[in-house]
Amino acid sequence: MKTLIQGGYVVGFNGQEHEIIRDGAVVFENDRILFVGKQYFEPVEKKIEAKGRLVSPGLIDTHFHSGINATDYLLNEPDKPDFFASNYLAHGAPTREGAKHAHLKDVDVGQRFSLIHVLKSGVTTTLEIGGPGADPQPYVEMVGEVGIRCYTGPSYKNVNFHHDREGRLEYDWDDERGVQGLKKAIAFAEKFNGACNGRMHTMLFPGHVDSCTPELLEESRKAAKRLGVRVQIHTTINLIEFHTVMKRYRCTPVELLHRIGFLDPEVSLSHCIFVTGHSWVAYPYGDDVKIIADSGASVAHSPLKYLKLGITMESFDRYRKAGINVGIGTDTFPKDIISEMRYAALGSRVADKSFIAGHPRDVFNAATLGGAKMIGRDDLGRLQKGAKADIAIINLKDIAFGAVRDPIKALVETGTSRDVRTVIVDGEILVDNGKYLRLNEDELLDKVQAKGEEIWSSVPKWHWTGKNVDEVLPLAFKMK
Ligand SMILES: [Zn+2]
Picture 1 (spheres, rainbow, N blue to C red):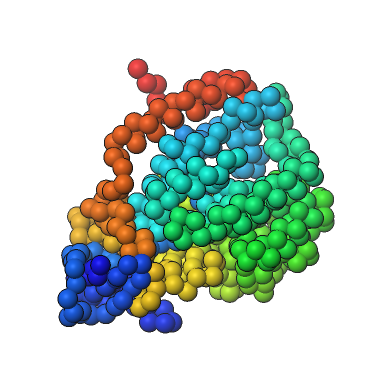
Picture 2: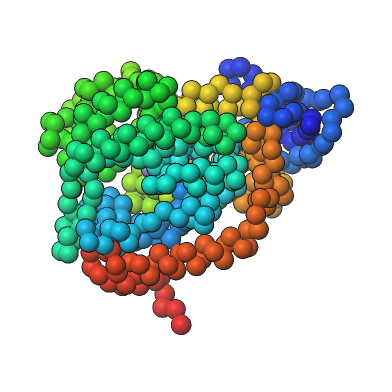
C-alpha cells in the first residue's frame, strides 16, 4: 500500500546531510520510502496530514535497558551512599543472599512497557543492552509483538557486584561465568539475527571494562567479527571503574581497550564519561578522546542519567569535534529521546561554558545519522528514497511551541515525547494520534503499577540495609 504523508516540515536527506522541506511530502510503500520532496502527484491509497508537524526520520536510541521505572526510582535516590556517584553500584547491587530477589526481568509487563514507552518518544530503532534473559524465546516474541526495530543480545561479564551487610561493595570474580556468558550470547546472536520479520538484529554486549577480563573482551571481539555483528560495552561510566582499571592495569579504561585491540568502527562505548580531561578524573596524562576518534569507535551518550547525578560529559562538542561518532541513548527513566537531545545540548553548553555549544543540529544528527552509523546502516536515520520507512511525526503546532521558525531548534529546545503523534516502523503504523495501537494503554499501565509495587516491596529482601523502600527512599513529602 502506498501512503503519502503531506504538509509538514519534512526532514529530507540529500545524500550528505538533512535538509528541511517546508510543506513537503513523503511517500512510502511496504517497508521502503519511495519519495521525499515538495509534492507528489501520483495516486496513493492512504494520506496522512502532517500540517504543523515535523516529519522526522525515526530516532535511534543507542543505549537502552528495558524494565519499568520502578527500579529507576531506586537508582535516583539522592541519599544513597556515594560510590562516587555510581548509582547502579550504590543502589543496584544486592546482597549475595538476596540476589535472587533483585531486578528480576519481566518480559510481559516491564520489558514490553519500556519498549512501548521509548517507541512513543519517536524511537524506531533501539539498542537494548542485555534484553534477553535466561529464556530468550518469550523476549524475542514480545519484541516482535511490540514492533520496534531492536538490536539486542544478552549482557555478560566475569564479575557479579554485591554488597555485604555493612554496605561495602564487593566484586565476585568468576572466569567461567564470563566464558559461559559469551557462549550464550553467541548462541543468541546466531539464532535470532533477523528474527521479528527482520526487525531484530543481534549484538554482543560484554558488561563493563572493569567487570570483564581482557581475555573475555578479546574473545568477544573475535566472536563478533566471526558473526558479523556489532559490539557495545559500558566504558568508563563511573570513577570506581576508572580507578579499578588504573590500579589493575596502570592505564585508563579507554587505553586498556586500545591496548588489547578492541576498538574499531564496529564497536560503540556506552556513556564514556570519565575520560582523560574530565574534571572529576583529575588525571593529567594521555588523550582518551583522541584514541577513540582515531579508532573509529562510536560513543552512546545518555545525558539525563548523568545529569541526575550532577555529572555531565565534558563535552558532547569536544567528542564530536575530535571526530567521534556520537549517538544518543536513554539509559534511565523517562526514556524520552527528544528530551535527551535537549539534555545533550544543554550539558555541552555547561561543560564548555559556551552558549553556542551543543547545537540542535548536532544533537539531532546524533539521534539519527549518528545512531545509524554506529550500527552500520545507511538506510536508517534518514528520509531518502530507498531508506527504511521508519518515520516519526511530531506535533509542533501547540501553545507550548508558539511561533515556529526553525522546526529542529523548536523540537530540541521545547519538544517532549508527548508531542509525538505517529510512529511508523518498516512502513507499519504503530503509534497513531499519540496512542500505541497494539494494546490498551490503560490496561498495561494498571499492570505496570502492580509490578512496580511488587518490585518496591522486594527491597528488604535484597538491599544491604534490610530496610523497606520508604526507609531506603523517603518520599518527597509525607503521604496520608
Ligand atoms: Zn547501560
